[in-house]
Every structure is written in structure tokens, then in C-alpha cells.
Image (cartoon, rainbow, N blue to C red; front, side):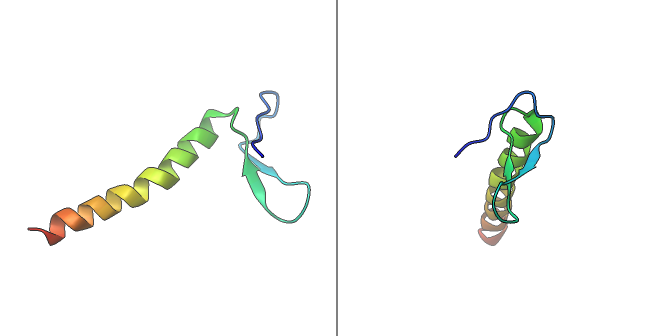
Length: 54
């Protein structure tokens, strides 16, 4: 379910089946990407709420 391979230098790794890709959680870039995907929409939503309540 979770790909963790410290010897693999790739952040995005193609899955064995299909055209999907997965993150290599042994890489710092994968964690930064995941945090960005989660935090950016929350920050945008918070900004919209703050501006709407002015």
C-alpha cells in the first residue's frame, strides 16, 4: 500500500499495473508534495473565509 524504498531515488514511481504513479515516502520530496497538496487548499479556503467575513 505504501511505497518506501530508500535506495530508489525517484519521488514518483510508476505502479506495476496501469498508468498510475505512487509516491516514494523514503524521499523528502514526496512528503513535501503531500503536505503541499493538503495545506494549499486549506490555506486558500481559510483566505476566502477571512475575506468573506470582512
